[in-house]
Image (tube, rainbow, N blue to C red; front, side, top):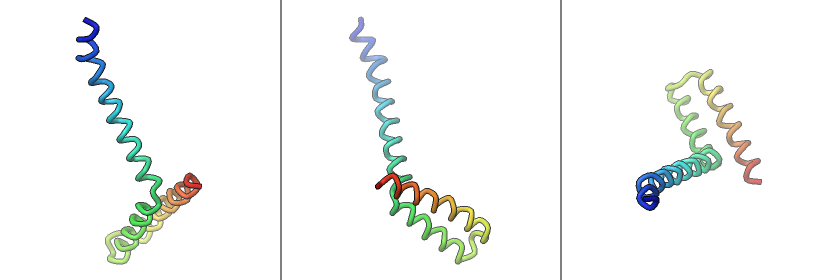
Length: 77
């Protein structure tokens, strides 16, 4: 009976936990990868230059990205 319980309830729960752990790792890697942040800064600058976003939006988003970049560099060292 315990083996069936483990198969029906234990393994799927462990699989979900494993999936969530992997998603968390991937999210952390993307948030702290300075090349991704630089790409976002470049995309943001392009949007500003082609008048897709206002100057205020640009500076707000740039501040957030620069803060993330600083945090990523501090975490790497």
